Image (cartoon, rainbow, N blue to C red; front, side, top):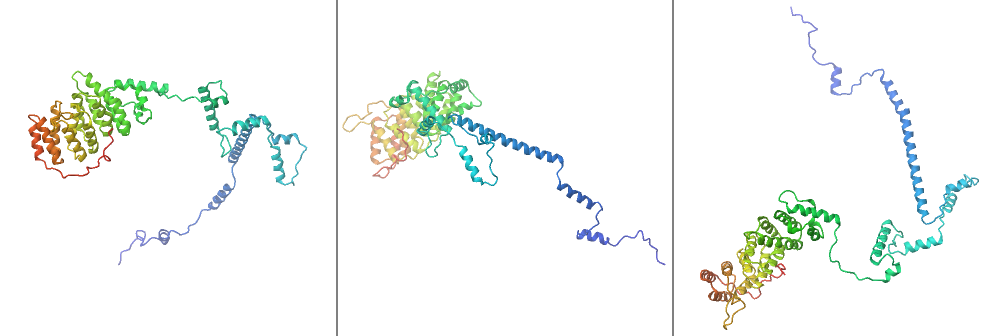
Length: 472
C-alpha cells in the first residue's frame, strides 16, 4: 500500500499563468480602481480654471507694467519740452488741442491717413529767426560739426569747449575770436615734463622705501615703471642715487627683462654706470658691492645695452685699471654672442691706447670665439702700431711704455688665432715682439706664432658689417 502524501505540503511545479505573463511581457491589463475616473475628471477641471489668487496677481502685474509705460512716456515728453525750451521753441501738444476744441469731432468712418496728417500739421515747431541764425552759426559752421551725419553730439561739444578754454588761457581772456585767429604766437619748447602732484607724492614714498629695501616684494608702483612712456621722469622722482644695492639689483632685472635694447641701454647708463663708479670710489677697500656686481651680470642679458650703455662710456670717460678689471671679470664669466663680442672688440681696438682698454681686449680674446677675418686683421693692426718702422721712425704708439697686460693680450691672440693670420701678418707680429717683447712673455709669443699655419689669402674679407651690431 503506497504512502499517503499531504496535498498542502506539496510544492507547485510552476508559477501561475498570470505571473508569467506579467513578468515576460509586462503588458497585461489589470483592473482599475473605481475612483480613478473621478480623479482624472477633477484634474481636467483644475487645468481649465485659474484660482482667485493667481488672477489677482496677474492683474496686479499688468497694472504695474502699464504704470511704468506711462511714466516713461511722461519722462520723454518732459525731456523733449526742456530741450526745445533752450531754443525758445513753442511746442504744441496735440492732446491739449483736443481738450481746447472739444466741439471738433472726428467721424468713425473717415480714413486714418487724414487723422495722421492733421496730427503732423499740429506738431509743427515754430523757431524764431534770430535763434535759428544763431543755431546755424554755432553748430553748422563749426569745425566739429559732423558733415556726414549732419548732427552735433555731446563729445564734440565738450571738445569744442575745451579748445576755447585752452585758447583763452594761451592768448588771454579778453581777446575775441577774430583777434585769436590773427595772432600767431611762437611755440616755445618745453624744458621739462610736469608730473601730477599725486604721482610725485606716490613715487617719492616709493623712493623712501627703496633706500632701505633689502628683501621682500617691491612696491607695485615701482613694478609698472617699465611699461610707462615717461619712465625716466617718474624714476627720477624716486631718486635712484639713494637706492640700496639690493634695490639696484632688482631694478636691473625688472628693467632689462621688460624693455627693449634701446631703453635698457638708457637705464644701464643712467643708473648702473653711476652706481658702479660711485660704489668703488666710496668703499674703503675700493671693491664693488656684491649686489651691484650681480646687477652687472644681469645687464648682460641684453649685450647691446651693456656694451653701449656701460662698457663704452666707461672706457671713453677714462676709467682706471681697477674699474676695468672688475667690469672685465663680469664680462669673462657671462657668455656673450659672438657677433656682439666681435663688434665690441673692433670698437675697442680703434680707441686710443690705455691699459684699461687693453684689459677688455684681453678678456674678449680669451673667450675663444671664431672671430671674422676682419676683426682678426684689426687685432693685427692694433699690435703693429707699437713697432718701430723700417725707416727708423717710430710708429703711432712706438714710444709708449707697454704694460704687462698688453703682452698678455698679444699672447692670448697668438694662442687662439695663430692659424687665422696670413704669413705677412705673422712676420710683422714677430718683428713687433722682437722690438717690444717682454723678457718672460716674449719667447712664449714667438713660439706660438711660429707654430701656427698661415691661412689662405682672401681677396675680399668677410663682410661682417651687415652681421655686426652698430656700436657707434
